Image (cartoon, rainbow, N blue to C red; front, side, top):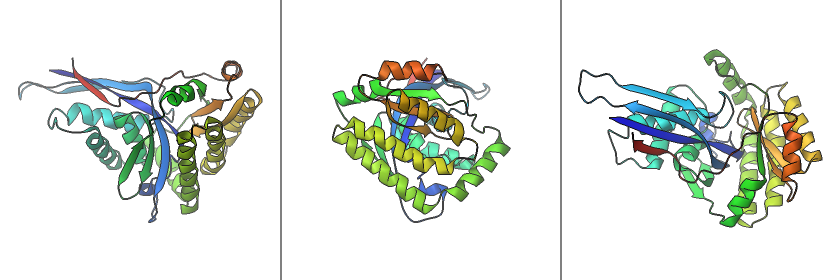
Length: 288
């Protein structure tokens, strides 16, 4: 029997490094995320007899190290394909929780919000403490306006993917990720949520830049310059605000109303644009 599945990647608008599991402190973090129609997809040939081998393969819809939560999406996909046939009563939240444990076992410090974004889909405000609390942000028609005005680009920065390089990066990240930085990012994420609920996309766009001004202090020296260059180009061509995604390999900008086309043209002369829609479903499993 063949099982096929796909798990969406995500945008982290703010708070992607505020998960308390990443540092030792007693507070809680918060983030605003959105699942998008870029996927990790794969299949599992489930053996029908003890003598048959099991085969699992997957592929990702973006280049490696894009900073869109692909490692978490891979864990979600793996759990869906391997664990779900054994315990087919698993909810999407169960899948996300198990995927978080898989990531920890593999030594990754990816935040838990990535797995929940991939498993649950949608636009969410996520509280990260001893437990994960997910609040779905159902914005009605505003969701599609937000999607229309957002522009996702590759920054040209290569995120670490080799085990040794990632370990060095993660160690440096832990040193920079102070409780004060976590609190500030969490506060901006909460303000973003309020802006979205109020229907104020312009203020939401300004919050993106607030998040970037904090996040830039967490990135290694040398990554700021390229991202700052893209921020300046975007600002000159109609962006209200923008921030880096994940480890900085992608950046997301919100265009002013009516400036979407001009901003796209300007950014396309500098880098590649990654088109997307919002994914509202989350991880999906079917029999092939």
